[in-house]
Amino acid sequence: MNKSTSTDQMFKRGKEMNSEQSLSIRAAWLAYVGGHTQEQIAERLGLSRIKAQRLIALATQSGLVKFFVEGVPAECMALEEQLTKVFALKRCVVVPNMQDDVDSESVGVIPSLAVAAARHLTRVLESGEVRTVGVGHGRTLAAIVEKLPAANRQNTRFVSLLGSLTRRSAANPFDVIAKLAERTGGECYFMPVPFLADSHADAQVLRAQRGVQHVLALVRECQLCVVGVGELGLGTQLLRTQSVTDDELTTLREAGAVGELAGCFVAADGRPVQCEMNERAVGATLDDLRGRDVLAVAGGQGKADAISAVLKTGVITELIVDEATAQTCLRNEQALKQLRAPVRSTGGRKVP
Image (cartoon, rainbow, N blue to C red; front, side, top):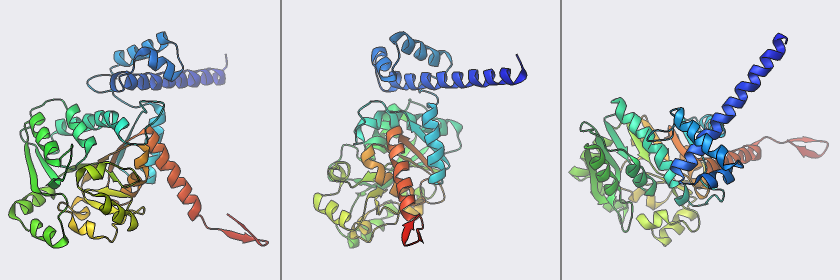
């Protein structure tokens, strides 16, 4: 056997090992996060049940499965690199799809997003480098708290980024903060004012409250902020269940809004829309969030446009998203890039 043949075989063997590990990680996600049976995993991955069982065992024996599943499949890693480059992120985590029929809404992907975000937040808090954490609102953030292991973090402060009183919400921002404090033993600070005031004048009065000013001062001390992403597509339920009425949603869409970040409604290019709704939000502004680590946790293909818009604000430094939504965001950006490509004329014909 010559040297070239030996090298080729070693390369092939290494590639097969990487593929095997990637499959074992994907199987572990499906088993321990997605709650699938070995038979379902085998069918999903196109393997025998014995092979699926062996892959799950391999992930466990390799130390990849602890309280969380360590690592992501190779395909997700490739998406992470692309998203990091396209949106100038410091860090990105793409979690595997948990089902073949990917839900366009975010509900179906919340469990896997919550596990990945809880793993990240746990590591950050264990490092001791972050003592003040800002927290946004939404069902995904509430789910993250449920996945956090109980720990003693008495020196950690959790601060609400926006008004904690909503018209009707299953994921009240104050509840998220309170649960975080309960899980970690840390201190919690919330704004006892509405997420959206009735008018710009009312919002100014509320922001001037001494208690609100104190919390906003703490927001500016946050080393890390964890936020969700609101989307304004037809049929959306998230913002409606919090503080935005149907009429207000219509007004926002007419103004060009496609996404929401910490109470700020933005257009597809990431710029805040010219709309009274943006003047009525009570809480941290986008400028308050700039200059610190801001982790966005969001998913569901119906949110792809909103996520892309929020990423273009330049505020987000880290992202946790699901595999299908990551693919949609990248496809949309590629299509947009092609539309913007310069066109030259040749012999009466326009060609790119």
